[in-house]
Length: 348
Ligand code: ADP
Ligand code: MG
Image (cartoon, rainbow, N blue to C red; front, side, top):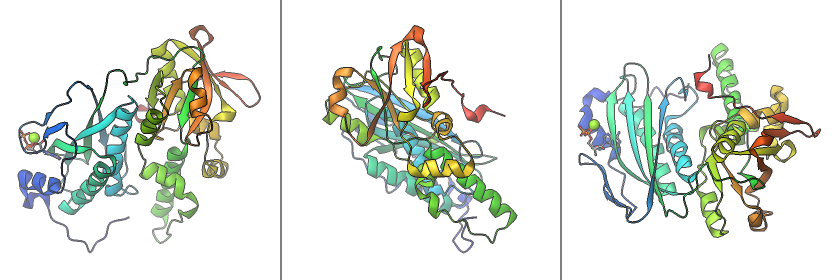
């Protein structure tokens, strides 16, 4: 639905693998001293001196993780990088390199891959990471993108999921539920479009939440902010699956319980109004929605004054003894056990 029929369409077979790699990667330059050798040899060479090296990888599959009927390829490239950088920032580390592998079917012309790499390029520029390698192969079905992100931190800076203590404050960056709701809006417009292709979707009232779905930003700024405030979280995770399951991860790995206050969960006004329109409960959406890529972390009570009043951070609860369990404290002051919804891609 977003394809322009007048655009040039160069079959990948015209280039061959090596020319294709060269073509797609020609405008990427190296920015990090830790990158000794990037694309072009059998392997990249990295040197981190005394720093700890953090590595994370994600595989994105067409039809499972993204739908190209409403996801422009440029956004997809950008988001594929964000999803991975988010994991690096969740370790309180600095992202330095990415490795991007793709499998493409003949359905995709060169120009489509150029769009994908334009998004990847934009992400690497804005976040200051180097593209140092990848693999390019064919696929019989759709598009697959695998991104590996590499980062660094001194060993006293790395923050794990494990480390939260009873009485620590539970803090989240930004606001929640937007990405999931943005997806609901896009799915609805896609269904409308299928029935009547002449109807142009009006996404204007949903710009924020659709943006949260199509162009998420990894919270590099929060890692820098915590550094500037001289706050080292006691545990941290990024919110890819929904607040509820991420809290449970922190609790399990830290051997603690938690009280999460429903009234404290940060929601954008557009999330609230769209929830009303879709007849969804905004707390459920924030708890189980996923793809927000915010950072969820715990800090010791002593650090509270340092983060207090910061518009980017919200205290949403506090950690308890393990025996007390993990609960949502509702607005009506009742306690409901938090449940991990599991990863939606494996449902149905
Ligand atoms: P090999 O045959 O040893 O796997 P390739 O020809 O696949 O080597 O890759 C050559 C170089 O190009 C390597 O540095 C590799 O990391 C890089 N590369 C291959 N595909 C991509 C891609 N899609 N994006 C970025 N770099 C790539
Ligand atoms: Mg290869």
